[in-house]
Length: 281
Ligand SMILES: [Zn+2]
Ligand SMILES: [Zn+2]
Image (tube, rainbow, N blue to C red):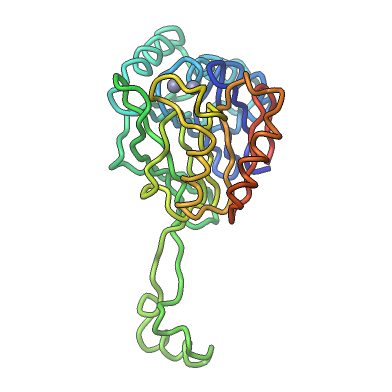
C-alpha cells in the first residue's frame, strides 16, 4: 500500500502516503478511519485551512497522546505560512493539550521551503510546496514529493563497465555522476487547475475534480474533471488520481469519468476516489 485516501468534497479529505509517513490534509474522521496507521504519521502537510481539510487534526493529536506504546516521536505539521484559519485552530489544539507526551511541531511554510522526509536507506526525499489558487482570502499550497537521484552523465553513457571503473579510479565518482530530481507524487488540495510548470513529469498526480461537469461550477475556486485531465496530459504524468469529487455525482461517477477519459484517449492511467469510500492504492 502506497496511498490511503478519503475524500468527499465539503465533508472531509485526507491522503496518507505510506512510504514516507506523510499525511496530506487531515479532514474529519481521519484518525478513526486510518486505524493503526494513524501512529505511523510523521509529517502532516496542510493545503489550506478549510474545515473539511483540517477538522481531524485534533483527533490525530489526541489519539497519539492516549495510545499505548512509543510516544517519543515528534509529530510535524506544516501549513501555508500566514494561514489564519490553520493558525487559530493550532492555537486551540496547543491550549487544549498542554501536557502532550510528544513534541508537536507546527510551522508555516511557503514555496521556497523544502522539508526533508527521507527514511533510512533511501535516496534523499523532500516535500516541496508550490502555490495554488483556491480562495482569494486565503493562502493555499500544493505539494510535490521529490526524490534526489544520481545518474551517469550523458557523456559517459557509451563507455563499457571497465572504462567507467577506470575513470572513477582516476577522477572520482562525482566526476562521472550527476544528481537530478524526480517528482514521485504531486498533491493539489482544493484549487483551480494547477499551473503545469510546478508538476511537470510527476509520476502520480492527485488532482481535485470537485465538478465532473463544468455547468455545475459556481464561483472560481475548484477544478472540473476536464481541467484535471488537461493538467495531467500537459504535465505528462504517469497516473492521475481524481479526488475531492462532489457527492452529487455518486450515481454515475464511473460512467462520467470513463466517457470523458475515453474521449481524450490519455497516455496516463486515470483513477478516482469515490466520495465517502476509502481508496487504497
Ligand atoms: Zn475541500
Ligand atoms: Zn477548500
